[in-house]
Amino acid sequence: MESPSATLYLWPQRTLYLGFIGPLSALTQGAHTLLFGLDGAIPFTVGDDTVTTRCALLPAGLTFSAQAGEGRIACCFLDPLGRDLLFHQSRMERHPSGLFLPGDFAQEQQQVLERLFQEQALADEAYAALQGILFPAADEVVPGFEADERVRQVIERIRQDPTDNLSNDALGDMVGLSGDRLQRLFKDATGIPIRRYRLWHRLFVTSTMMAMGSSLTDAALAAGFSDSSHLTNVFRNMLGMSPSMVLRRSRQIRILVGSEPC
Image 1: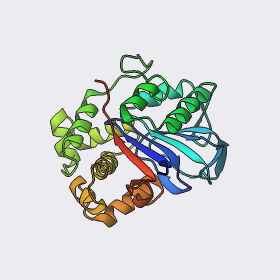
Image 2: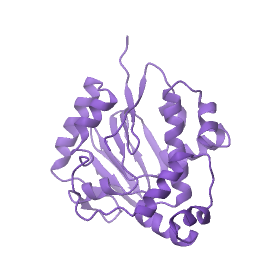
Image 3: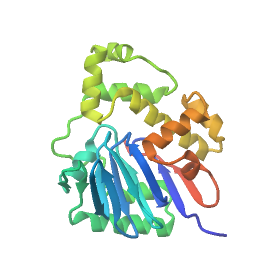
């Protein structure tokens, strides 16, 4: 039997794609993202700047395009509150384009990612291997990080029911803030507006349901999208590709759902 050419790992706070992907059209990320070219450097275009590198950290909300060619990538969507972002920023150098470029630590990261790809690690095995490498360990102190409890509560509320389109004012009432004030705090903490985070989480829910055997349409509707066309539009805008490229469950891709330590 032919081995899968890609694996999509889904954890509650983070997502990792390992494998072939081709070109990414212009997209605006819904999460802080760490992207590696496992087989060679990748050209990233941000506005008028093109930067070619084996690894880049892309803050949420940054619009860019990338061309992986025939090579494999590792694309990790980091936690929404920014703990992982600070973990990496302290090890990287900011480019004028808005990208963060790697230091010496990137080589160790790539070696671990390559091993996970070759060994086809299960979700919990992969997560254990990546702690302290792609994201901080659960008990690790990240200098400068202090989560805003109000933003955390709003994220948890959205995750409880992504189909619920609560207004910013309604969410603000939960944490003692006006809708406008909450929106500003939320964007400062996550890099994106509340509505965009809700759409981003719906992509995660859709992916998880497809991993469990749901059809694309059924998963999209259950996650809160109005129809499969709505899902496709959001998918292209946030991920730079169609959902069928990544989410089609076949012998060419594994979709694995795992847990994270508290």
